[in-house]
Image (cartoon, rainbow, N blue to C red):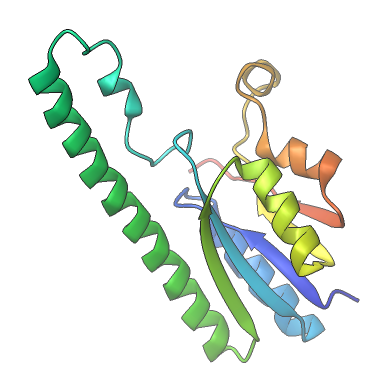
Length: 161
């Protein structure tokens, strides 16, 4: 049925459930698995870029904050990559042919592009659970992928803690 499953993941609490379901589906279908993380400043766990806004009057403070932000971004990038590597190893240990990639971009568009390029049969992803107003104001990656994805899309619902 599904031979190539793309699982976009991030550092949100829902990503573990997404990974587990993607892995289970890959095992059952003897499918290949691609783990993807799209680095984006809008991501919940990314460093806050807002601290740099409006500091042009204080060049020294601005340089220090920029340096701090760059360090935080590097840490965020490495933490995200470490999570991908960990999930990758779990999937390999389960006998699933798995690869992973981390890239910078707009999550919805990048997920669709990777799915098309990799020729995925299924995109299995989570959603944030924004209200209708929140989705209208902030946009929704899962909605974008459902409407623009080149293949079937399965959404894993988040469950409040």
